[in-house]
Length: 187
Image 1 (cartoon, one colour):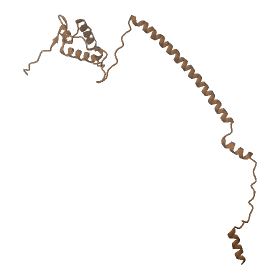
Image 2: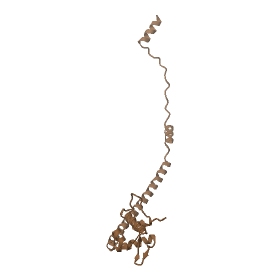
Image 3: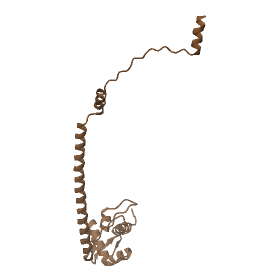
Image 4: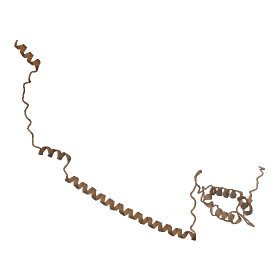
């Protein structure tokens, strides 16, 4: 019960800036981001102070951004973090005045691509219509032609029946042995 508790440690902005290796201006930006997500930091008579837990949380958030697992400090503080081993895509920068010409070129290229896609769609529609017409014509032709079974029976009916001659009974000519037998019988 007589535990010696270490007093809760708080840091001044100068100490936190030195610990994080950032300027005071950057620390003020980080403090604003921290307060938007976690609420106001405590203050003393000189201004904002940083509890140890807040400094550690800010260090973890910055490490996640450095590792590419969060898009920014605020996102990391909110828990918007990619799973271990994966990275989040970088946040795209806003175009500046120098990028407006590139943006105009991009818009022109997109319009050209849209026109090309619309032309391809028109060609595909035309080809589909032609295919449907050919299939319809094919069905009509098939319906007009006789079936193969009908063709075979018609061919058989149109042929004149051929008379097959009756086999004539012919006596076989006796060979040498047959003649000898006949001669021997006669004896």
